[in-house]
Amino acid sequence: MKWLKRHWFDILLAIAIIIGSYYGFRSGGPAVENVPDVYVIRLDGEVEYALYDFISAGIEEAERRKAEAVLIEIATFGGRVDAMTDIGEVITTAKIPVYTFVRGKALSAGAYIALSGKKIVMTPEAVMGASEPRDQSNQPVTDEKVLSAMRGLFRAAAGARRDRGADLDPSIAEAMVDSSIEVRTEGVRRPGELVVLTGTEALELNYCDHLASTRDAALAALGFEEETIVHMITPSPAQRFARLLSESYISMILLVVGIIGIIIEFTTPGFGVPGVIGVISFALFFGARIMSNMAGWEVAGLFILGLVLLVLEAMIPGFGILGLSGIGAFAASVILAYPSRTAGAWSLGLAILWMIFAGRIIFRLLGTAGAWDHLILRHSELPEEGYIATTSQVELLGREGVALTTMRPSGSIQIDDDRIDAISEGTYIPAGTPIRVVKVEGNRIVVRSIM
Image (cartoon, rainbow, N blue to C red; front, side):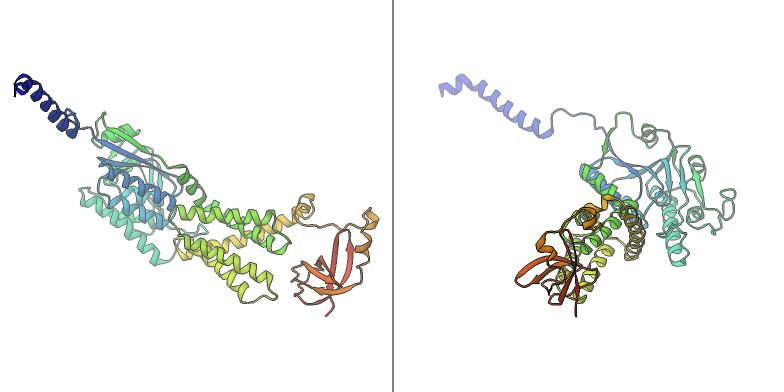
């Protein structure tokens, strides 16, 4: 008791410090002014599924961190319709406001994405529109079903702006898609042309809420003060790599190189440079699509199954069910790697045409160059050129034996009790077929079927 009487003040002081510290830490300390923060996402380049994945992840991060808003900066010539609609849906269904800032070109798919924002800011010299759908060969789509769907999407986007108070003409949005649409507002475009609006024109027609030359000016126009904290969402190295490989022309190059590499590998002996290049090309092709959520691992598995079946077919005489199944699995894996089956089939067909064209050039150029000899033996080591075959090999000329393995054209033969590596004259020879040695050139033994 004496101790309590003597130290009562110290005890109360300690209790006050503990309680004050506890509630102080829980409340985060003294109250400070609540400064809003905005997340900025840049939409550059081609509109494809890797971009959709990046924008979707960025908006989700902003929502998770309870940001005030998201600003999407747009500079694109367009891209895929399916990726466009999915990006638009992510914007319109976000839990926080998503604004769009057109700082360059919002053409084709970019125009729809810009119209999907809660508010639109444009630089005075920016342009938006020219959204006519085109097929894989870059020709205008004439299918009325597709055109009607696209007109509906743009009409709905314009209608959503009108519901938010903008006094605009929805036919202008439809005329961005279809040049045959009659625009009720006079002076917007010349007859027969797609609508393309500059920033100034869009503001006059209520297709834009503000004009601003910089990002800071755009944020100020949207009501954010100078103290607003701006967070730039940048793609990770993996996302940048996936976006690069998902570009339509890069995907086509990977497909063509992959197909050429695999074909060369299956038509020449051994596993060499063409096979490695082919496998790497397809690994990059499928890897980019898996990282971009355009395809799942099952597509890569289907491709591997196709390769396995083709390898088995190469080891078994004849061209039967295994070979056809392997080709089918390979083709299906490529088609399923695209969001649209039509786009996948078109891309595969176009890749095959490019493969034929490129293959002819490669064989024509390298066929006369020494570089090709590193992959395939093309010249004959003739005695008159200074090459001398070993005595045992020369003695094989005219000898008969049997093919131990399928020769496509290389394989193994047996003469007496000796197993010998040989090559056919270019024809397919099944295993077990009687053969005769018809030529010996250096270490190269050429055989012919004698059935």
